[in-house]
Image (cartoon, rainbow, N blue to C red; front, side):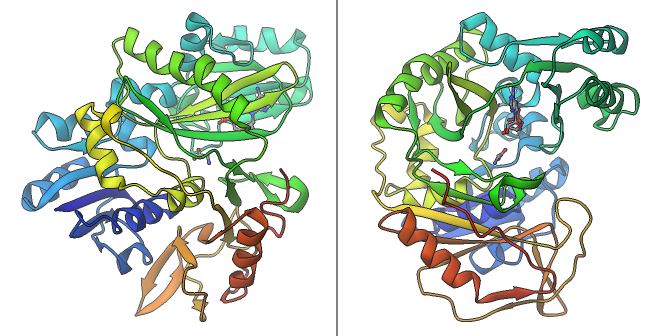
Length: 418
Ligand code: AMP
Ligand code: GLY
């Protein structure tokens, strides 16, 4: 069987790497992929939002029996719907369910209606009432664009000026285009964050190993927010007792709420949780595998990912045993100097001899004149497994030394916080 994966970052590299272990998968295609993915999959330069060419590609390749849609944009825009309507098997939520990530107004209203714990909030559809509220509100608070904004649509505001600036950026200057047509203003919360990704076929829901991300650019959580500078799994603060409580009060109620709304969710549902002193709260939902969480979660999977994808599509997840290793995994992101703001692309990358079992998940790489070069802000995630976090971290950092490019930087404290 052949599998097609849509997307081209570190997450998709980890998905392809895991699918390649399945004895049932003979060949993997990836659109558009990247230079690392091209070592294990046949990549073609077709973007994840180029639906016409994706559909033509699937029609031209009858050996493809499963298409996995990994990124948020094509899910929200209904790529899975289009594939399924044409009779192809596709993994990922349909657009009606992917809205749980694509609209914060939707997800906040869902949580309010079904009593799922989250930050208190208000929704605004016009600039004047948003400003009137921000003039007199208490700070800090959080201003969020309703729609998909490449992870940049969340602004933590310490002062009224910052709040009004965020409102202007979103609703007047349209910094996030139509994603800012509605704005959510949320209570500011504090506490450690944990990411819990779950497989669900709309009825059965199976959490994966919990992980933690490091979002700021520099050590000790300094610098700007990024897409994620490194991850580790499992999370120690997400104890079995807490996991059981979250399963009963957040995870199952969310899956049931979506079904009650006629928006059955089949795919990976990602719960971004904050452990506040008032209890666990949902920060956000994603309708997909997280990036770079996937890079530390999937290497711990001991079952066949291809079988799991099929069971999710068929609604037979209750009969699909899913096993995890007791090991730990750490991923250190190597980024381009200047990221998350402006940075150079096309910088040559040198990779020396790494340990045999190290996983170099490429995020922003390309081949140029036969040479490996950078093509994004996050370039490679150096990922190691070990018997515990300390062992995995030591190994990851030892192997970071074998990768070099001009301007490369990384955090040296991934996996130290607990
Ligand atoms: P989101 O995309 O909604 O998860 O927000 C991105 C990041 O902003 C989160 O991972 C948190 O670090 C932070 N954040 C979001 N909402 C809040 C909140 N209500 N209070 C404090 N921090 C938040
Ligand atoms: N790491 C957060 C995300 O994938 O949205």
